[in-house]
Image (tube, rainbow, N blue to C red):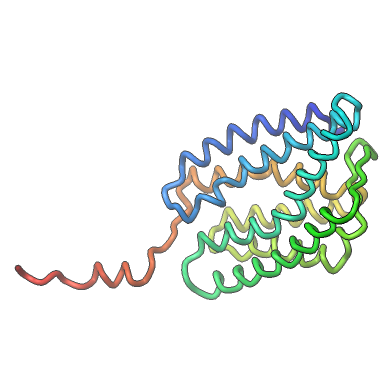
Length: 229
């Protein structure tokens, strides 16, 4: 598929509509962050549309630098924390939640490393093979990439919610294919497909599959009979 500003803006518009519809279905506050994933991806894709315009000379160099930084900071400096945290918030107490919180901590390490690199070192952006390549000397190393993948995809795969697990599995498949076929534009290509697949998040809430268990003390309170007055 040929990527372009048009593709990014079109994807952003469609995903934004889905994201707003998803947020309207939220009934539990702890599910709000995960429900916001499509809308956040919509903003992310809109940002890359602006990057395309900058690389095509349709907006200024300073604006291009800012939107390119925003795109990569979300993809590399926020997503590895946001995704596992969003999944952890939906999980009831138990071993799954503990492991996912551990993956969130790993995501903090990966995100922190990438954020330092993006802030302290120059970011080079160019069009390559009908996609956008983002280059930074500090980000994208193999150890950090493994931590990144473990945090983002691992949390999804460990979820107790079936559709969330399917979303994680599809992301792993697309991630692997992207790494093989378009390694030079990995961040741009994978985020595009992850954004389009976020329609599964809407499906999860539309089917009413988010069932967050109440805290144990709330269940105990309901089991204690009230004293007669």
